[in-house]
Amino acid sequence: MSVDGISAAAIRQAAKRLASADRKVRAGVSWWDASGIFGDVEAAPSDAEQPSVRTLLLLYAADLSFRLRWEIGPALAEGRTVIAAPYVDTAVALGRAAGVDESWLRAMFDFAPAPSERRYVETARTARSETGMLEFTCRRAAGLSTREAREALLTRMRARLKATRARA
Image: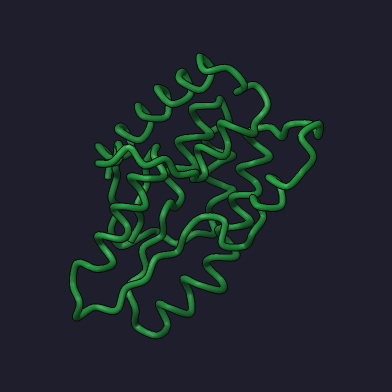
């Protein structure tokens, strides 16, 4: 099962709610940055060159591959339900909103199996601030240093996720 959206707090809330919804079903959540790749990027010196959105998406694909191999796959083999938070749709919407070619994105994430269920979330019910893949990208990616650039990206991403939800 996947939970995708534009807010880390909303994704986290939805994933936790889904994981605890049915106590008879053993469910777990696979969170972004399970591999620690983004923690390493965050630790880079502040004067380091900012990565592009494309570079951060490549790192996200590497992290997702790690999650599939070491978290999601083994849990599914044990008969557990896994909630991937976020999964592919968030990354593809982010890439498309940033102008990355959709066929390149789809080819890059082709290794990821389709989820049995997809959930999309908009905003959190609380004002709690959390950092997820999108927030990290807005903070670290080249070309997204102004509030206006981030807001424009979020607007385009929201539209992409709505279109994906409509097709699902």
